[in-house]
Image (tube, rainbow, N blue to C red):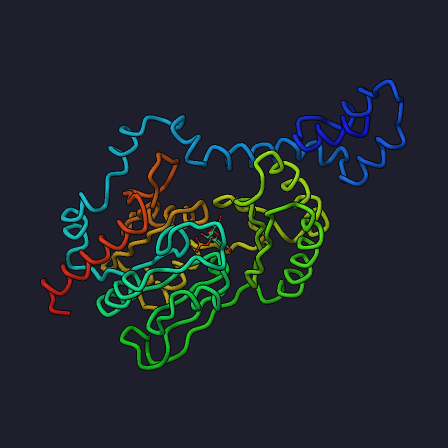
Length: 354
Ligand SMILES: O=P(O)(O)OC[C@H]1O[C@H](O[C@H]2O[C@H](CO)[C@@H](O)[C@H](O)[C@H]2O)[C@H](O)[C@@H](O)[C@@H]1O
């Protein structure tokens, strides 16, 4: 009986009543109840089971091995053409406007790797971003803590928006695009710092028995990595995460690339960070600004949507596969991002002598 429950809970395809009704010959209800308690399955979580299944299904669906089933690839490319192929059209559209660059980090400037602590960007990419920042105001917008993403990028002349935009800092004094020589800092979620620290510790404790699971403290948010966890255990891990989150009504869960993100329930995201940065740069309600946002993940969609809704600038999704997106263009991988950024630098130098 206990084995039956464990096997089925791991798959998350059963409800509490199904477990209790399907008592085996052993009739071991107390053991069943204990296992249910250990896994914290209750009616609320059974309802949440649908949510967990949908997270896990969409995480699976985003794996390259499953991706071919989404839509028609050639149709998607027609709708979201390569930003490299459309380069001339893009720069033509930006004519007479100030380009402002927004770059996501993981999967955009650095390739996706198993170990999040080793997601290094290449020297070539760093050099390209450095040149880019000489031509246009440039911001890195990442789910990671600002300090951590700065540790990877190591360029002082950029704006950094860490923790999904909840921790924004301007470039150091003397940088070309530093506005009015004043330092810039925006941290709309400071009151959540203690709770994030606490939930991070609880998640580490709760998930430590799952081989490959990794919890990352991203300062104003946290995340649980699924990438190195056996796919058969994804539902169980998602369930554990949800059971911890149940005790934190002011935190919410969202999904990224083989990761569940834990964030404060505040109206702030990468889209708001983009708006804040444009405002700080003096481009509120301006028609002569052309923001370009490049990102690969669901959290980047908030920024793509702002640009689409405002009909301002454009979003570029980094993906080899067809995905639902608010971006207008696509690039397949970080190497293509680098080529696109290089072309922008060359174009700027040719046309304006940056
Ligand atoms: O906004 P981003 O800069 O894209 O950050 C989002 C998350 O990126 C990192 O996780 C992702 O990249 C890892 C390294 O390649 C990969 O192992 C993981 O599966 C991806 O989800 C980062 O570790 C997270 O903290 C960020 O939230």
